[in-house]
Length: 399
Ligand code: PLP
Image 1: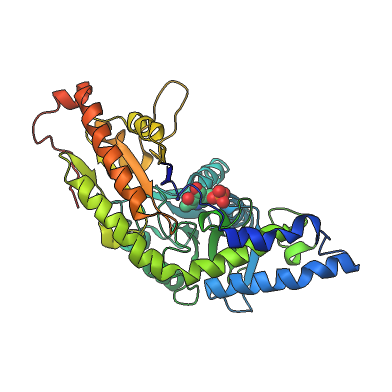
Image 2: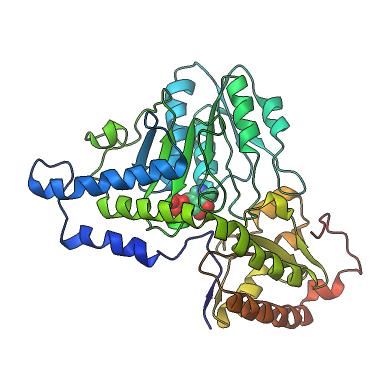
């Protein structure tokens, strides 16, 4: 059996999404910015797709939604533009991000820090959550931007973006949220709380890879990252990815239509799976379920190297993730587990299972069986588990 449980990394393209994209490769391939009939064939489809994207975000017409190549581009765009417009000009000198942002925010923050911007990296608490108060405590009159993700890709932890947005508005600080892991898993409405910029990416919600976007509230226009032509109103040059945009429009529409299923049925499958895993001794989940996206479980099996568990699962046809990178000879610990303050041993044992609306109960039953067997096998040969004292303090609690 093959089971894909790495949906926070990317998702299968929904066949209906693929179907609406297909005509834009061979039949309707005109550049929409040309002046002939070939261009005319694509325009109405682009318009409909953009309407679906606006509707999915509840974005009013007067606000901007700019299509980009991916969330990495959107995140780079916001932070680098703020650097050019506010920091380099001396109007402000500070931004705030969390210490568990995706690398596309984190590495960009580090880059602008190296260019002279002061950056505050907000810590997460022992449950993997951000406290909105910590944003308030760190804002100064020189803060240009707060960038805090909506939901974390590793733990699924949902951060209090509504509260943080309000704090930013009260303090006249711009607020950006990376909503990549929120679309299709949580209700997203840019009018329901103060937010200036919001990042999204189609391939995380059953759309194609290589297309994403940035929502920009009216009046918060950004300096373009890519200069060139007049596409996207001059905010993002480059010939439009027509098939990608049409596909993202369809995927956004479906994400909204299947939100209840994701929040109820997928969550139910995830919860039942997690309940069973937590019955295994010395097993830990960090973030409480009520503060988590419905599809994600990051779980630690004390004494088992995450990569060994992945290997066992991979041999059984199951794709999951450790959330840690394999650096040449060193195995890196899961960065969120480290940020939580998990001991070094436990930080290497985290496995992320991320489900989708395509996941079936049969697949979860099979996975549970494989994982239980792998835990038995790997603990039997684990020196660190054998030596761990009974009731070893992890600093983490089971939920
Ligand atoms: N932000 C978050 C929270 C993510 O999970 C990811 C992808 O893993 C990205 C940004 C980057 O997305 P993209 O692949 O579209 O650049």
